Length: 281
Image 1 (cartoon, rainbow, N blue to C red):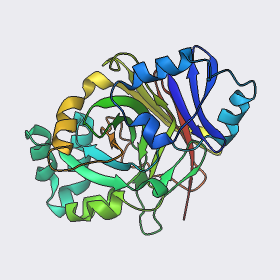
Image 2: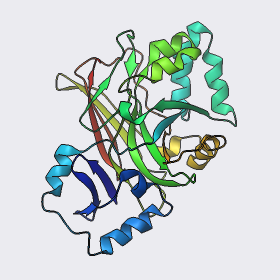
Image 3: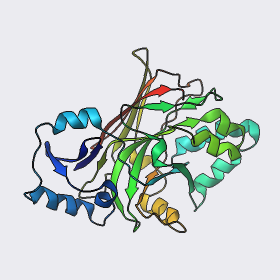
Image 4: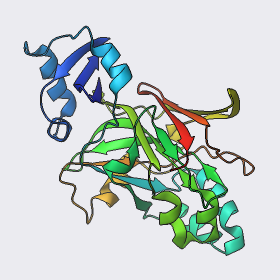
C-alpha cells in the first residue's frame, strides 16, 4: 500500500485503486500496525474510489511528512566509508570514518525539519559556497513514536562533499541547509518488512544526457534497520514519529559534482521514483 499526501487530501493506493482517507497526516501514520489500519479503511464503506484522484496524486503530491523530524545515518555502506575517507584525507579526518564504520555505535545526525524538505518534482538546493556537491539516494524509514518501523519512502540526502571533507566538524553545514533533503513520492506501507534484495537506483541527467547512473541492493548495508532505530530512540522522543535516512551505498566519482538544472531520479523497488531538479536557493 502507498500513502500520498497531497494539497487536495490524503490518498491511499492499493492494487491500482485509489481511496480518499479522512483525518490528519500525523494521526494517520503515527500508529502501531499501520498496515492493518489501512487495510481496514479499504474495507470501510466511507472510503471509496475517486475517479479524479490519479491526476490529483500526479499534480499535487507533497512530501510525505507532517510534523516529523528527518534524521540520517552515515557510513552504513563500505562505499560510503571509502568515499568519506578519500574526501577527508587532506584534513586528517579519514580515520574517523573508518572507525565509525567498524564501531558498535552508528553515526546518526539531525538532517531536516519538515519545512526544509523538498517533495517529488520540487527543487533541491546546492550551496553557493560549495564546489563539490552530490546526491545521496537512501531508503528512508518511517518510525512511529513507539520506535516501530511502519513504512518506507525514498530519500535524497544532499551533501556538500568539499565542506565535509575540509573538516568533519563542518558536517552540519555540509548536510543541513534549505532543501538539502527530499522525500517521496509516497509512504510505502507493506505487510512485511522490505526485502534486503531491494534495489536502490539513481540517474542524473544534464541537458537531457545521462551523466551518472548506478544502483545497489540493501543487503550491502552493514547495519540493520532495527539497530539504527534503537540507537536513535535511546535518548530521543518523537511525538509524531520520525523519518530516518539509512545511508547511501552509491557515491559518484570524485570528478562529479551537481550543477543547477541537473535532474536527479532515485528509484527504489516497490516504492517508486523520486525526481528533483537541482537549483540554488
